[in-house]
Image (cartoon, rainbow, N blue to C red; front, side, top):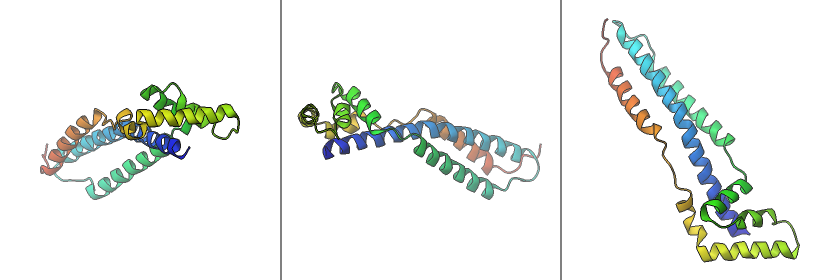
Length: 162
């Protein structure tokens, strides 16, 4: 059972990381857009009025809090991770059934667990978990990078004096 739990935990962590990346990319995109608007407003006048050191610290703390809160909120259970692994690896609910039968002493439960372990070994699931749960970089990261470059360019320019 240790091996099954190790595989399920690896899948659960990969699911959780993908979920956090997806949700945090939305927060970071909104934050970068707000920073761009703030930098444009700051450059329109003849002098700077935005304390950028404070803004950068506040933005960093905001991103950290958003990522930590999403990490805590998006933790799937072992059964959810096992079920998703079963589906992606086409194991026909062997791992989820083994997790569900773990604390039972029935002969059926023992057979289910042994079948799951045999299937894991024959299909080499432990070495293929990263194949079934690849890290997915959200498409918004491209837009975030573009907005961040534009914001940096605007900030590095002197006041426009309009």
